[in-house]
Image 1 (cartoon, rainbow, N blue to C red):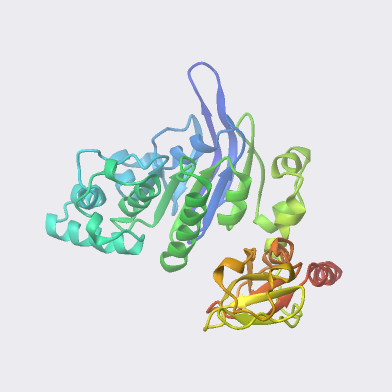
Image 2: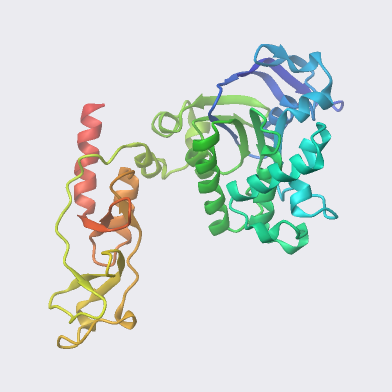
Length: 361
């Protein structure tokens, strides 16, 4: 457990970056610090591993003041991931990952073996081991940075805007990868971002900071979206917070409608919209009525992109509504855990379920 007690950081010019911060980071979850530039979120993160030292108050890890021991020893027991990875350009990927274990006295063979294991865990192909950072994409470099931070199996992982320098598609895949890793490893993660969408997606709890280093609200993402503490939090969370809040409402029991399907290569049926599936009943796209040619076989050239899919095994009301709204037919496609079509969902069904959930709250 990480505990901030009345922590303040005042720089020599008089600037107060963090002002009397009281906050407890619980074990085994992701806590996200979010807020506008200059709000003290990164300063708060860096005081945990003493990259910056507090001017007042105390920070304790499992009851021990971080200022009570050697700073270098403290840092070796805390993983640290920064923007653009911060890799050593003259070292191979394998040796970058093995850096901290070797600093801790591991043998070269043991450290490299651990690095190889972590490459697989974070989704890096073995053939990348002998490459250098400049030979990797930005997303691959960030995966190396995460692997290096995990190499000595630290209980705490600090992540300072690690995904902000990559494009949106890569960023989303890295977020999903972090959630997958966390489900397996259960680290105590403190994550800094300026993006409220990223904070809400990743955080078990979210701390919103206002300018001047003051904690405005510390809450679970669903509560943060539904009940912002004041106008500042309301404005920072954004006008579409109601839609994002659907991500925290279960879609269990949402009724599924029938859905006409046709396999690729089969004769096109009549009707306005038909979902095209492969031999395993996985959706491939939609066939529009205007593209039908008197029962001729359906080919890939006829397909209209199908929008997002609603996974009935893990879906939320947000994913169900997004599937319905993004579908060209107006009916979202519901799939099982293996991606096979199990029915359809409409926006009206989701709104009715939302009304039921609100009535029960």
